[in-house]
Every structure is written in C-alpha cells, then in structure tokens.
Amino acid sequence: LAKTTQPISMDSYEGQEVNITCSHNNIATNDYITWYQQFPSQGPRFIIQGYKTKVTNEVASLFIPADRKSSTLSLPRVSLSDTAVYYCLVGPPYGGATNKLIFGTGTLLAVQP
Amino acid sequence: SQTIHQWPATLVQPVGSPLSLECTVEGTSNPNLYWYRQAAGRGLQLLFYSVGIGQISSEVPQNLSASRPQDRQFILSSKKLLLSDSGFYLCAWSDRNYGYTFGSGTRLTVV
Image (cartoon, rainbow over all chains, first blue to last red; front, top):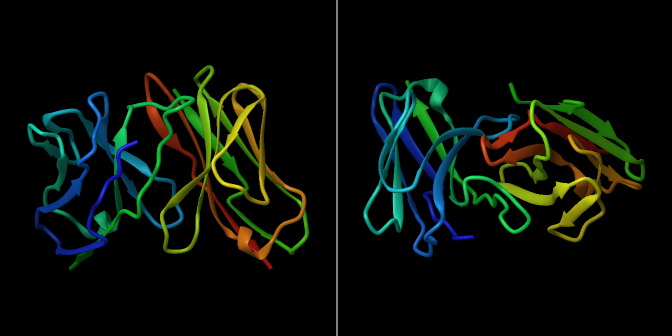
C-alpha cells in the first residue's frame, strides 16, 4: 500500500476554510484516496473518497491533481466540532486478503473560536 | 442497514487476567473484519484481519489472539494481559459495497 505523508497538526478559526494536503508519491493505478475523521475515544468515520479530479459531498471536497501524487481535503467554514484527527489513506476502496487499511499518524486539526 | 457492535465500551483489567472483546456485524455477509489498537496520542495499528470464518492473519507479534467463530463475529482475546496491552481497541469491517466501517471502540486499561 502506498505510504502517505500529511502534516501532524493544523490550527484554524471558526468559519474559515481548511485545506489539509496529503502526499502519496507511490500511489498505484488502482488505488483510491480516502479521508477519515476521528474524534477522541471514537472510531474513525468516513469523510470522502476519490480517484481523480474533484469530489464533493455534503461535508467536504477532495481535490486530486492529474498525477495523483497528492490530494487535498477541503473543509468549508469549519466549526469547533470539526476539531479532530484527519487521516489520509491510499489503497483499494475495500479490504481483502492482501489489501488492508493502514493508518498513518493523521493530522490533528484544532479549531479555535 | 449495516451496523457494527463492539463491547464493552470501557474495561479495566488487572495484569495477568484474561481478555475477551467481541465485535459483531449486521446487515452484510462475508465481510472482511479487522482489529485495530490505538495507543494514547498515536495512530491506529492493525492487529488482525480476517477474510472468512476461521481465517485469521496477524500483523504484529503480540500477547493477543483473534478468532472468527461465525461469519459476522470477531473476537479479540488474551490469556494474560500485560500493562502494554492498554489502549483503545477498534473493530472494523469492509466489503465491496460499503468500504470500511468502524465500531465505537473499547477503552482497555490494564492495571
């Protein structure tokens, strides 16, 4: 599975747009890019998944350049409740005998009032 | 709908005591099942995964074991807990239609 690199932490203020970038230089042709959100003492929660270009849902947007070696999670108008750890993962969209979800250290986003 | 149940939510156990954490999934068949552990302030470490009944793969050598006695049941066990087994344990499942879904976790404190 491709290794990912993302900032350890980020700070923001309520109402701002937050962009978290993830590097994945060794992404494979069949790999998808998936972002999870984790609050303290809870399991990670799926945010968004994409393969190329741009994906948008009700909570976030995911921007993937043509070379797919990086991706950016965009959170519009963050609130205090968006304070969490955000994980970027690269791999198949589902698991199997040889495809396991491996988490990095994630990015701790701290939203200030 | 698909749901995942994990219990207990919190557990305090003395060193040397046995452990049994259970995870069950509803609303899907033949899912892939996973056990992760998260130490305080750190990322998630994959411990075990299973692609079918009785099929268990271990990612790291450790004091723990896993079993899958039924299609939608995954159990994490230990015969004798160590202090280093403390952590936040998460069960997860995946399939082709729904990707990965995590349980609510069990906070284990070994004292």
